[in-house]
Image (cartoon, rainbow, N blue to C red):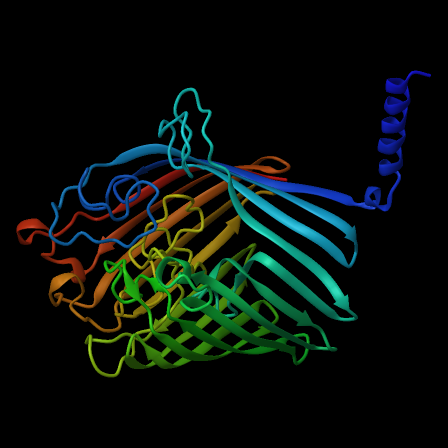
Amino acid sequence: MKRRNVLAALAILGVTAAATTPAMALENEFHGMFQAQYINSNFNGAATTSFPGNNAASYGGDTQYVPFGLPKHVYSANFVEQRARLGYTAKASSDLKLVTQFELDYAYWGDSSYGTHRNHGAAIGADQTNIETKNIYLDANIFKDVNMRLGMMPYNDSFKSIMFDADMAGIAFSSSYNKFTPTIGFFRFNDTGNSKDNVLGHLTNDLFVLDGKYEVNKDLKVGAAYYFFRNNAITTDSNDLTNIDFQQDVKLHTLGLNAEYTAGPLTLNGFGILEVGTVNARATTAYALNAGAKYKVGSGKAHAEFLYVSGDSGTTGHSNAFYAVFNNVGTAEHGYYDNEMVILGRDKNAMTTDNSIIATAGNFGQGQIGGYIGYELPLTDRLTTAANAGFAAVAKDNGAFGKAHKSNYLGTEINAEANYKLLENLTGGVRVAYVFLGDYYKGVALNGETPVNPYDAKIIFKYAF
């Protein structure tokens, strides 16, 4: 046999041998989602006060409604937004797996092509490099009843995500002892040392987590958590989102309690949070209170939510402004979705464009007061409908955006939606929302006028696999 034939035979044998190694025991799991939605809105898509106008709350925005000093009339935008998420899990055994997830977004059809930019590539010709890495982490049961997650993972607080809800790098251990489930973890949000003093670990934004849940009985569950926020990174001041080159100085202890109680068709839940420490040289004592209820009525379900977050009327001295997690460019990495709002609060269907009147828990240091009700009614096994209403106000008016306002009342929202199951994993839906602005916005537009009321309408297609 010629030498090259011998080498070829050995190569084939090597590939065959590799295919019979234990690596072949890997169980490969693929999952993901696709969502496309048509949006017609004077709130999302065009800048929220004028077009082309200000940069806040625009295409691909993650910002707060800021109509101050701008024309009252708003152009209505119409566009299509698209997202796909692709997940792959390499499962070595029931105790060990690698979890990954990737995302491809189009902020709007027709944005750009033949380039390199996240959230773009939907113009003619496509050929855009825009894939994003969301998660890469190890999920392992390292001891009996002890689970470890290590890497870039999704993680949220135990208080309806009003403090943090994001992908973050860290390590978390959780366990289960009869009815008690404890968790301990450490996460590093940002490390800006390399850009300032060239020493990694010196200028960081970190979180330490202690969390526990206890099932008292089948009807009552209680929980408690301690979070320590330590942030001295170069980032955006959480109480001044216009300051983009600010060294944070946060040392904040957070204690929280939560509970859920079920009695027949009624479920009650809620939480209380206390923050104590310093935020940017200001001694801080802040708190948040929540109560929620769900009640089965006929073939549907009614729900109600109340949220109070403390605010501060000043910018010096002792502060009651509530602290929640931002990234290093000032985007909120948290959200309160249980209120089922579209414009007053963050929208559950929002993707790249994610704007709202209350975009952050702290609400520019002003805090918030909100009450929300809704009813979900399935009409058939394929068609589900829902309607919601809510009001919101700032807890304290601190003269944000230049001057005191006529009132603390932000506005009232009404919204409705209908979703129809087209196929087993494909749903088509419609959601519309309208907000009657409160006197907080009276006379704040250009020439002392009042902004027009915002609306948002979506036609949504979702596929999950």
